[in-house]
Length: 130
Image (cartoon, rainbow, N blue to C red):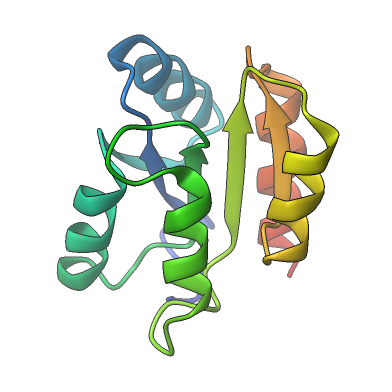
């Protein structure tokens, strides 16, 4: 993970299998002036991390085919290269045990969909003051 530069803009990796949800989170992040790379799966997120070392935060959907956001979280936090990158999980399902499990595995936050602009601003401002 790189330190923030480029006018303190974060580079956020947005991961969601839904093109609509990807567009929504990307728009919210860009409106807060952050750089966004959006991918449609956990596998692509891991591939991108190998190619792009300057990711400051990952925001991922929980429920995706092939690799869930929880599995992506575990891979990121289990990696010596990427474990310092904050991961935020999003889900439309408010399941307290799932939320707790993600936070215990190292998620920085858990956002309920539909994600609001205030959620994104809160999370991003907290990441930038770390």
